[in-house]
Length: 477
Image (cartoon, rainbow, N blue to C red; front, side, top):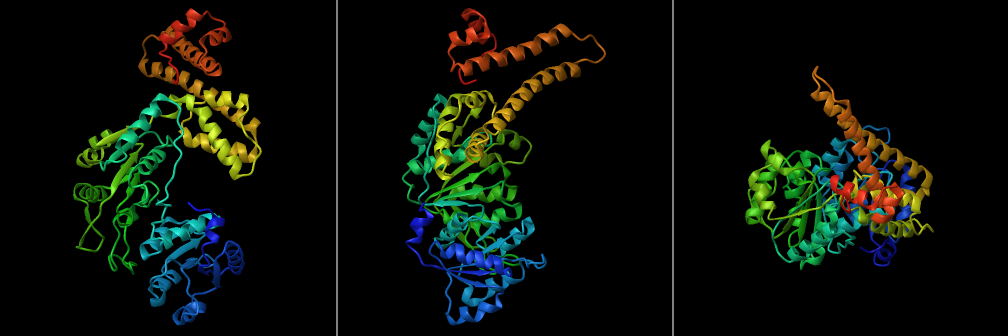
């Protein structure tokens, strides 16, 4: 992807901002003209209609605030007027608003707005939206990375080496792929890596975040719609599958799809055909489908919320990504990668993680996986608050140990129904949990040097080996 500075050399495109806040218009004009755009502003649509009709102004993208300054009004007002105005019919329109009401977002997109960007925004974010809509790439929920999708695959464990090898093996096949794993493990990275290593690397890579998309929008976003398909559908609009034609579509969190969307997706997988909403004409596409989920789809099939035939169509190749707690040896690698990334981005002189903080990072259980680690490193780089981060991690680690002990106690309480309670057994079990955690902590602190860990725990080397076998402790566990 080109940087803002690189793009500014290639364009003097005209943008039109329609907003009833004068201060905002002045801000937008100043910021976007500074990176090479020609900006026209108006406090109302009436101000610029005649200029558009005469060709005096020829914006390539129109940004509009669909809600008036006093909070009244709705997307059916100025937005619908712009979308129905003949000279503007072929110009991409983007809603740019403080309003975060999901109903307004749904209504705006259904009407034909190409994207909905929240204020306040970053210039880089809106600049990317402009590039997307001008290249006919879908942009809702930042759905596409376009033809230049690029990703760094950071790994240092045998488990992830196997994932990488499978990705390389299947990259140049057209079979569907199902990537499974907990939230934040890197399913998105693996999907992009497969595309990047395939012969489709120069074709579109379109990401659809199924969980983030309002349910009412999913079908129209995936398959498009025709003019008049529903109230507010003033123009024909292609869907994500059409944008991805010839390339790859990545359906993230596919377990969230409704049954009707699952049925249409099954048809696309079977014969590459579908119809837009409101149309009887079948369209044909050639798209490589990669899906991902953090749900257990076998359970979803049992309770009837996910189709078995769709599951077997998608699950031709399954790539399961283990959680970060099962590949802790990669934590230093990720730390180094994120430190370099964010130090450059935020112009920080930090170049490494202090030893005391790294020890805690290695001992933390990472329920949010790599994404949680990334956000923590970003916070460290930006705020440089080592002490508060360490206190927070220490508290979470201690709480996790207490939760394990409480779980044992709860188990025995549920079993006790007026009978005898074996306190010795409960104490032994609780002690074993603490003992196991301390052994794992010592091993991580010593980079799995068993001699050194045994010395730290004040036990013999043989005792440590026996305890590791008793508790099934292995490197990376």
